[in-house]
Length: 239
Image 1: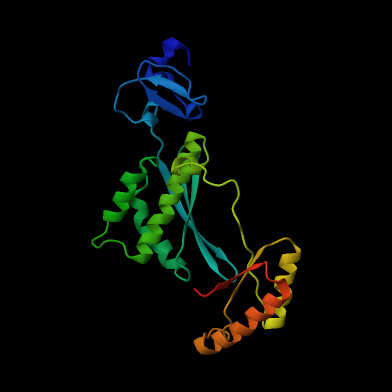
Image 2: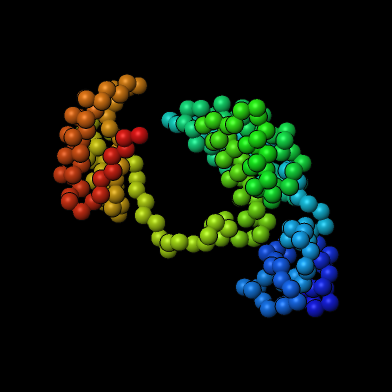
């Protein structure tokens, strides 16, 4: 920003000017940021735009095959869309209903006021949110953070303390009806280069009988270990 314009907050009218930093009279570049000489307590977002972005719509999407997932899309009048996820498995419709109940209190609000909107959502009902309500609130909260990262033009992790690792270890999940099939599936994953495999304790259809699951699980573990050798890590998913 040219020096004369840097003294005028109105010189930053559009979202593509972000990220910005509030400073005094100093105009030292900070990683290419625009330094605004402004002492006003007004939010940097209202300084950087001629109008405040508003939440236009909130929509839920329940998707999946074997297992359902609930995603919420928060859309703004500025064209930005944030995506969040609610994590209570088998209660996706209940979470969607809670999000629908929260929506009227969020439409027209500034999506960048995340903490304020969290308080609005949490305090809106007669009783505090329980497990389902907290999951619904969290899904919207994640979407709002997504919007803020897009508005600032940075990866979301930069707003949450910055990058921690260069690489993250991952694992595949395997499944088969018996120990021999599980061992073969594990061997194939290791042949692809994976160093971890994960599988569930066995169940009988929709029934889970703990004593039988433990006995059969020991046999499955032994078969997988024989198939992949001693260096591959095995994860048992017990829930």
